[in-house]
Length: 331
Ligand code: NAX
Image (cartoon, rainbow, N blue to C red):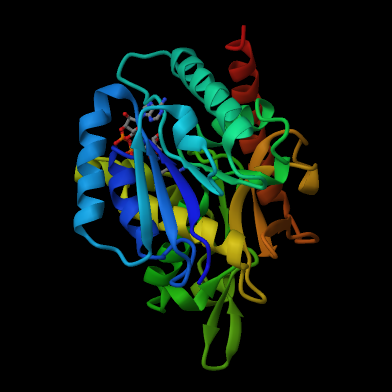
């Protein structure tokens, strides 16, 4: 039998946490034959609720779940973890300045970076979900210099899956037959959902999404804004932000990273830019990636037309500004 992997979920008493921990305990993230020990971290005001989640995990009697640590102690939470899913953060409240929210998250991610660096398992893989996800991941990377930069990523898979979902609804095809959309850039409304290389599996082979949809007006307009604004649409409908879709996409992100992407398929991940596609190096930016042997690689050589170029650049610009703002909070 395999040794259990310790999986950290921060912000585990929150609503994404509540959807995510049972998925991990069922093997959705690391596979149906991989035992896990869940490490759940939250802050003292949420300690009692966190303990309630632990009680429910015990009650659900998950066969793969070999232990649960529920704690408000960052060191205990980080010790020995092989996967860290960072969902905890400081949300933007009404009337708050962007800089104040950034400053709170910078101090959270700085502290948690140090704890992970000192106490996590070697080669720990980190996924940041909490917003501003790209910039929180960048801060975590900066303050955990001994964690390889390849191991620090942020979640844009939810946006990627939303794009697949929109194409599948529009064409009335199975979502599993749609592939190779791309989310470029920031997990924010400046992200660029790109279908120029996306295909659909049909009875007569793979066909480009552009050819099947045959409506560039929709693809260059409403499709993009629907994906960009989907988070806001969910809040409007549910009075709460996306949770089950975020949790499911976080599992997809880690599963593909650890177990590999299928041949001929890429996914979107926020990763440390090496300058590919003219994106400034030193940002955490969402790119198309393939994964093999536990490592992601940016897909190279895709054509970028003029329309796309502008969108890649403007989301990069926003990330550069966020980075500058985050650094201005470090005193
Ligand atoms: P909740 O407010 O329900 O949960 C957040 C939890 O984090 C709370 O229990 C809180 O006590 C805890 N927390 C706060 N500070 C902490 C700290 N320093 N250490 C540990 N835990 C801490 O929010 P939820 O709806 O679960 O969303 C969590 C985060 O995901 C938010 O930042 C949200 O903006 C972000 N999202 C990111 C998405 C993505 O695709 N990247 C999509 C969904 C979501 O909006």
